[in-house]
Amino acid sequence: METHRLVLPSDLNHYGFLFGGRLLAWVDEASWIAASLDYPHCQFVTVAMDTVEFHHSVRDGTVLRISCIREREGNTSVAYQVSVFDERAGQRAIFSTRVTFVSVDDEGKKRSIRV
Image (tube, rainbow, N blue to C red):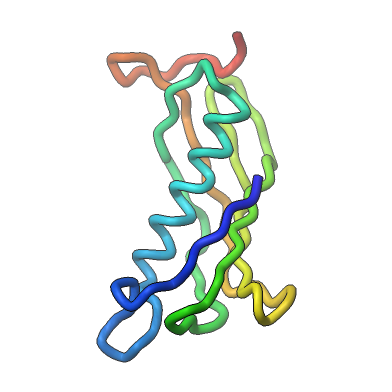
């Protein structure tokens, strides 16, 4: 699954660069949407985000492409490889990580992702 985000002035820190936490929220949201589309019967919560390393800075007006690819499926969990690209810079990845979700029931207990 892919989605795009436009970096706006409200997304920037006082130096004029994208807040890292804002990007992490977008990555979490995009990968959660991917998991929810792949497993519409599940309620997912984020349990892990692997290495968090920003490769390039991002300025106002940048169009980001967020790509989420299912990497691993377990009994109760699923993991997505997430890469974020600056659309104007071509294939230059500014960030990548793996996000893992676990399926839970209404009480927050793990449950199978299989129907």
